[in-house]
Length: 477
Ligand code: CA
Image 1 (spheres, protein in one colour):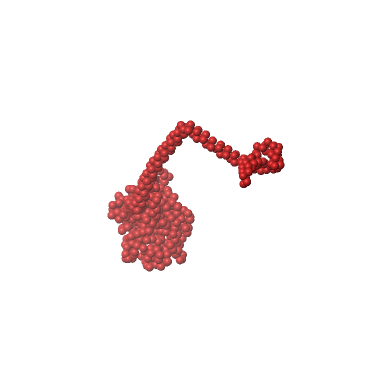
Image 2 (cartoon, rainbow, N blue to C red; image 1 turned 90 degrees about the horizontal axis):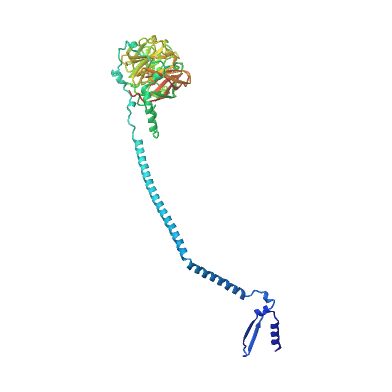
């Protein structure tokens, strides 16, 4: 009994806070007696975490969350109209975006259609370009070479007889007046030529020197190509040539050479082709019945045309029969050093052949040393027409004819010199030009146009050389 009473007294003496936390448990024990049990936390136990407190706090927190949720739900009921407005705004924005998307889709389709059209046009243009590239160039009338035979048939025969040509000589304007010396036909064609070049920029330009089928004004001269160097002193000066209209028994590839140094020039060496010339293996040697002078000989239609020594006589020597076919004096022509080129060498009479036929370049006492050009009949050697230029013959190193135009070379020794004059027999007018020309071996004693190869042939200080040419378009008339 005393222990139970003590417990009660102690319980009454405990602090109030301990009483707040005291709990009473009452029940029957196994013996059927009523049992009272007090549970009071000790001061030490009060510092331990309580299990009941956090649970309640947790419940309070959960309750708070529920209350907040209910509040929000309640607020949601009361805020219904505002949500509908936002949805309406969102719907409008969505509609705008969809509309813009549709516009962009339409724009995309339009651009795709334009792209397709452009691709088709590109393909058409590509096919058209391909067709133009494959189409052969139409033959231009100006590229058709004039037929030399027209000259000889009399279709271009000049007025007047051959023996009175000095009365028909035409003097050009003085070269100081460059404006009056302009070739009107050439000036007229110049834009067309530039336009043609612009139109064919994608097409490889043909090498005019290699595929030159027509006449034209000389535009440029290429570097010299050396074919052969002479073995001995006899080859210091000479003339070499090829017949543009070879006659049997000699073929068109036959090349001929004559060494012109000394006083007994009569040997003529024939080579089957350029290769044999380069190798120095002649297949034919002819002995001319009359001695030759100058380096101005030329070949035409199976005949050698040359100046007979110490005379103004022109000889036509037939190669096939090895005999003289014609001979005739060139009226009033200087010879044997009277009107030579600047290098001398008895180069008084210079014969040559071009697209228009046989020409003689020389001077007379009447012309007082100025170059005279005469068109010769290749059969009879008669002068068909003459032109007197104002180019001093001894002021130029050499000359050659291309398409009826005379060109003169300024120097025979300067490595880099110029073709300095051009005289057109079609217009009887000349002009100064400046086409670069090279004397590779610095002593050029013979320069002539080879109609057979459409190149310049030259004999430069023991060396047989040739030059590729580039010609412009032919005159329209
Ligand atoms: Ca010449």
